[in-house]
Length: 518
Image 1 (tube, rainbow, N blue to C red):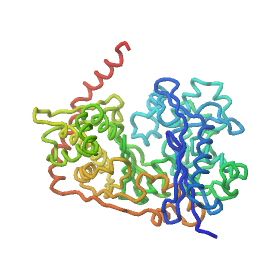
Image 2 (image 1 turned 180 degrees about the horizontal axis):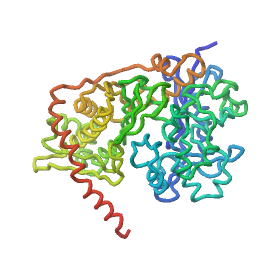
Image 3 (image 1 turned 45 degrees about the horizontal axis):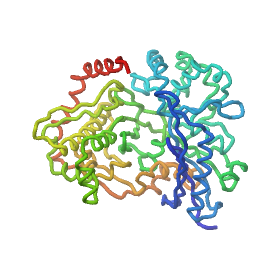
Image 4 (image 1 turned 135 degrees about the vertical axis):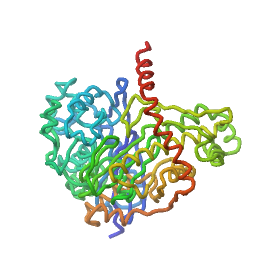
């Protein structure tokens, strides 16, 4: 037999991407096929599972062809999918309505009602505001607003659950998704029955999967009819997958306490493993057995990070864009070079990175961004650097919140577009006094995590930790500078003090603007 491979599938917001990896984690080939995203009303976001399937089939077939391997060399499948993308299925597992995807916020009223219960189950969102993204909010919205659909719904699950059922015929849940966003706690008996009764969703429990599997556990075997569509051999094992960012933790090697997955891009996500369970305001989690059995996942996040940098470039750095085109470069490179020559703190300029609200530690959708400390000496490079520093201060504020719960981060393992900027990563390392490592997988960390889970399902590795140790490789490490870290402490303090001083004015402004006629 030729060299064996595993197949990973990434069900993203805009496309399905398939990838083939060797058993030591080397990417052989990858291909993506886009699918539609519809916004029927403001704040709504939906997709048709039939579009998912068409894209998945196309992505898998092209990936196998592009890899130049025989289908029977693939020995297992797993994957990662957007979290909180909810499906409503009938008795035959056919969708009764489009899937309500993660970014949909139509269930804001339901989220407020759920938060108002004060249930102990709300420990997972810090006993504070409940996000309209989470599973119970979306299920409750359908029950409230589409009672005919709800009455015909036999199964409620997520994109991952739909995919696993389609491949194997088995209706099972992932410990990853149910712990992460369904308030499931294995240590406390599973689903909190009293919580679901209190919010008027006691009948959803019979619609949820009855069996919950750990990541990488065998869900079942690839059905013959589905195998024919995908161009794969029937009967190969399908390993349990989960949410994209959480599966990426495995693909980044974040499988033990002390390390934190640092997923950076338009937004920032911070995901770490803890040996002890703790809950509190200003953080999400710690989720029981969410990725690794016996460990707890802690979560923090910043809503608008790279998106603010892009906003500044697109609206206020036109001269740098033009100059970059003339020099065969780009605005980001020029701004990076100029900002690198400036001192820590950008000569007294503070930026609060709340353009789209605050996810943690305040969970405040009415927070807004601000800049203060301007003088006539400040230049576009100052503002550019101050935005990056403000984002780094926001990350440090989150890590500070974790430290208050005796959870310390010793290493950030980063993935995403901003990792291409050495300045940006160095500022993060210096502000938090934590080294940052980069892996060979780069932006394919979630797919590599899915490949690791497939390798577990194939019996190649016993656990996701073992798979990660064999399949993840570090390519770079950025060490913090102690003197620069000391210089940043003053500015971090001012950043943290800004929101409490301004939050009331922010809320008044947001509500005033919202009340204006359109």
